[in-house]
Image (cartoon, rainbow, N blue to C red; front, top):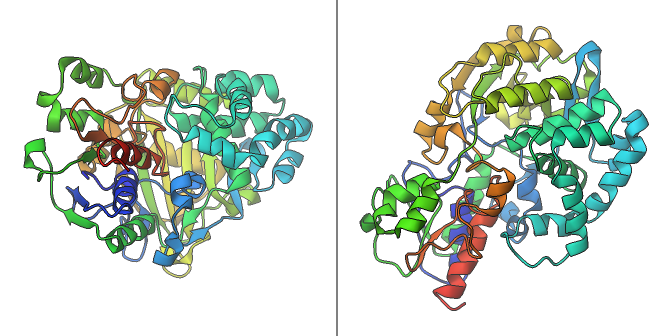
Length: 468
C-alpha cells in the first residue's frame, strides 16, 4: 500500500481485516496525507493542516464499520453546523434540525422543507449510493433519481428557481462552492445538496484534538490487525517496492504515471495524462487572542462560517477562479474549532482555519483579501491575531505531491469526471498491470475524508487477486 491518506489507510485496513500481510509505505515522516494536525502558528495552538470538518467521515459506510472510539477518536458537534453572514448583520443558519433551519428561511420555509425532507430522512441510503463506484446498480433507484433531479442542476439556477430569500440563496451557494466548480456549471448543485443533507443527518463534526486524531485511530487499528507502516519511504519507481501479490496506490494519476507509467499501455497512459485537476486553495491559520468578533451572534455558535456575501457575489468570485483570476472578494471558508474543543488552544485563546479558492498553481498571497472579507462581518478581527501562517498552492503541493496545483479534491469534480474518474471503466480502480490498483480521491467517489475510494479498491483486489 503506497500512500497513507484516509483512502490508503482504508484500503490497508480492509486488506488486513482478511488476515493478509500488508505493508503500508509513506514518504513523509508521519502517515495521514491531508488528515493531520500541527502547531502551525504558536506552541499550544493545534491547527488542521488540510481537512478540518468531517461530515462524510461520520456518514461513510467504511468509517461506520469501525469502532474508532476505542482508539481515541471523539467526534464533537458544534452548536450549529454552518452560519453564513450577510451585510447589515443578517446571517443564514444551518441547524442540525431540518425544521429549525426551515423556520429561519421565511418564505422559503415550505420549499426548503419539502426538498430536504426526503433526502434527510433517507440519508443513510442516499449517502451509501453516492459513495459507491460509478457505474453501479443502485439499491434505491427512485431515491437516486429524485436526488439527480436537483443535483444535476447548476447551483445558481437551482438557488434562483427554488428560493426567494437572499439569505437562503447565499447559504446554498456557499455549500455548492465546495465543489470548486463555477456555480453556473451543470451538477454544481450536487455538492451543496449533499452537504445540506449531511448537516441534518450526521452534522458537520470535528475530531476532538484535531484531524490528526482520525489518522492516529486508523493507524493504531491497522497495526493491531498485524499491518506494518513504514514512513520516510518515497516511492519513485514501482521497481523499488518489494514483491507483492497486490499493490495499491493512494496517489494522484500524475504520481502514478511517474512511478509506473513506463509499464502502462499507451492508451491507459494517455488517459491518465488527460485527467484534469481543479483550482487550488490558499490557506491561512490563525492563533487568536480571543474569539472572532462576528457581528451576528449565530456565527459564534457555528463550527463553520462561510464568508462570501450573496449568491451573486459567490457566483462571481468562483467564476473568476475558473478563469484564472484571483478574486478581490473571495468566498472564505472559516472554521473555529477551539470554540468547541478547548484542547486546540491555550486557555482563553482561540484558533481559526481559513481558505479560499484560487487558480491552480497560484503563488499569490491572498491573506489580505481573506482578512478583508472576515473583517467585513467581524470588525476587529485583525486585532485578535497573535500569529498567522499561510500556504499557497505551491506550498501545499510541495508538502503533499497529491495536491497537484493546490487541488485538495483529487481532481476536478465536474459531471464528466464524476463518471470518468480517472478513466471510463466498470472498474476504475484497476490498472492494466496485474495486481496494481489506484485508490486515491482521483477514483470514485472522489474527494472527502470517507475512505471509500480505498475501501472500494481493496474489495476489488480481494476479489480479483485473493478470491475473497
